[in-house]
Image (cartoon, rainbow, N blue to C red; front, side, top):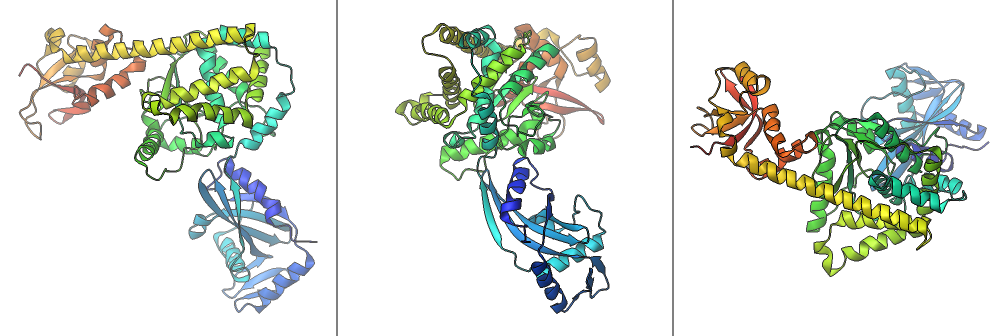
Length: 532
């Protein structure tokens, strides 16, 4: 027999585990076989060692510890994945019941860890590691490159569906009927998967934010089913193609998302606050690109977010979904999957990249929105790849696309108008002067007057200590500020965006900042009192 603990046997499984997000875990690589000649060679090395002895079944260490069998390092794998190199030592554990290999992240060797599928005391594991270090002190290192982890999954799923017949007329009608929400979903899903092909991997990462004013279970299910139909990034062994959905309550939840390299994943959050590390990474990439610096490691995949707020960022498209969405039939979903399979080819990826790269390197690029150009290229190549030019289906789909784009533009203009009117209202204190009261005696009274009885929208406050001492302010509660802004049709989706805009314009000088009533704080929103 040969030693099968080799790169050929274990590199594929370790690489797939890393692509699936197991970057910090000890990975079980499975059983291996050791030929008699190699086993005898290791036994001789053990007996020749000053501190180790082989008694035929066990290894005895000079400190008195005895363990069944022995262990050795079978190699070191350096996996280059999405711009980062992960290094693992391959530990072969040879025991009376057989041989098993484990991939251990190099940083873990400096601390404590456990092997996943066997119970060992800390002393036993330490003994096996000492044995491995003694008999294989310098294991050979090899490199495995995996620049686009989801590419094989996309190609495999594509191959299953490309041969299916596509009904052009039915697809055109489907796209026209559901244009207002389906085109953005198609664009987001294809954006993720086109990056599995070399040309599109260089395009900056953008983000998609799908919002809806009122929760609607039918709409949620329709969107999820559409993403499922369009998702070709799941491996063949998966039971279904539903994209993972990660609820982000704090920044720590993003670790799971970061492990989904080039996969279609949905992030759920009520506000944008937990996504701050993600947005910070987008900002840093944009900053270094703009000033010619060294680009940081790119994000794991395209962020697709389901939230209850507007992010108001240049690298993010905020898509406000209709309050009512009709469910797609199984036949409709099959049409989408076949169309996705026809679109996700190397040639189409190159064409999308060409249509984006050309404008972005032209003299007119300073006038263009890179994300808008990219989205338009993606969706137009999708239509051209699936519908015959100038046919009725093509015309119907393009009518739907133009309707969807006009609706998106109109929604953005309406949001901007609402924000403009809200900023004007807050800045013109004469419009609510009669609803500003003197500072209440207690924090409870302030809450009662502003939030419960709603007798006022704000109170006056003049700090007596600190850097703001002697200055005059007007203090709103969160609820009273929102109540004031509802007069200009402010809604919950825009409220956080409004607060960011007002702070950037120095209209709001403090956000959720404490006003002290003795020792009791009252968190409020501060603006300068123009009366003084």
